[in-house]
Length: 183
Ligand SMILES: [Zn+2]
Image (cartoon, rainbow, N blue to C red):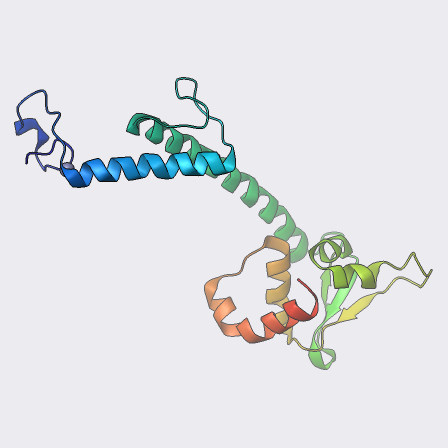
């Protein structure tokens, strides 16, 4: 059959070019159902000439996807804005207020109490000194990590991700530290 969707040269088909093969028909139905299932489960809202929470045609699906793409790009921009700010604060040691020490009394890395406390309940408990009026801690030692591993852990805590090569290199020690500190 000369399918007007998947044929390589639709222009050679005779008008009205409205024949469609079974694979394209089933595919179109599946895409529309998939999007509608997603919309029903997420209680989504979109376009004006598309009924709320339902897509009837592939045209609606295309517009829904385009809206989603725009939303994704906006979220990526916000995320990169936030990540850049946090990472700069760590890298340039802007208003750091706590030292993190690796194993063997290695060189410490300055960090921020607020970031540590929001990323881990264990760190939060350690840094919450008001309750018992204990003096504020100046440093926290993470004896399970080398300096390089501690750097990676901080990068992960501040920006929420790590390059694959760093993950592969330090996966065991970082998993151990994350487990121990409830990260
Ligand atoms: Zn087809």
